[in-house]
Length: 377
Image (cartoon, rainbow, N blue to C red; front, top):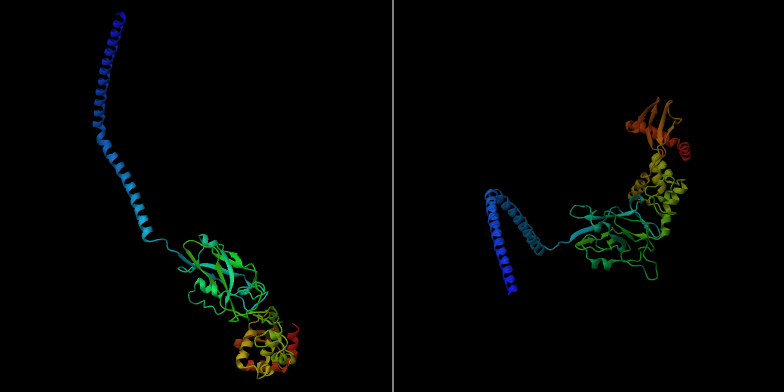
């Protein structure tokens, strides 16, 4: 019985305590709600516009990203990536003639240079992976049509390979690498002449070895040219000739040919001798060469001789037929530069026709003495 009473009393205390706690919590909640209502009353006019603005910005930003993504997808589906067209181009001309075993050179003995060109601008394409691509040099038939557009098959059908039993047609490093869109082809030579091909000429081509997505690069092709055997270099004409080159180095004068023999018989052995005789007596020089040299051939030979680079030395010659204090001023090949009269220099372009004729007559009269002076200067 006592245990039952203790249980009921304990139960009463617990239930009584729970009611008090409920009342306190209820009161606390009511007070909190009243405080929140008060805060809301004061802060709502301030917070509401701020919250609205922040929410609006975030929604617009998210919507913008979403629309941009949709636009990119649509553009990608409507306009797929277009390929870029580039082309290789030789930046300098080949130095002709070309001989077997001799280094293939560009103008003025420089290495051959190839550029990667953007046809839309005409400028070197110097950015992106293609601007550092690997190049290969190859040989094409001389009659290949390099004017119109060609296909890969056209190139393959016109590539020239070495003859059976011969070495590869090109010797040296046939590969190069573009550096900022420019490649240098150096130390390349032919091992065979071009006389056995259908056109008897070659062309050089350069192509890209690497492949690039969405980039098409057209090959570069030179003009056609003849490749001669190395032994032909012994008879090569010099451009420009040197004063002391043998006279057969001039165009239209073959080594040991008729013109060469005629000139030798007249003691005209070098380019300097040829120019000297021309300036002293051009008509006599024509007679030495004979009627076999046509006017056209004569002009070609003479133009070649005149391209010779002369030194800057000048000579003063006083002939016995001239008055005292009068002398002729001429260069190393007897070309009259002017007249020295009483220590006053008169340029040739200011001389009268009579004075020029007088100088010429004295020159011819004293030719032996003058030639002796020139030959040993």
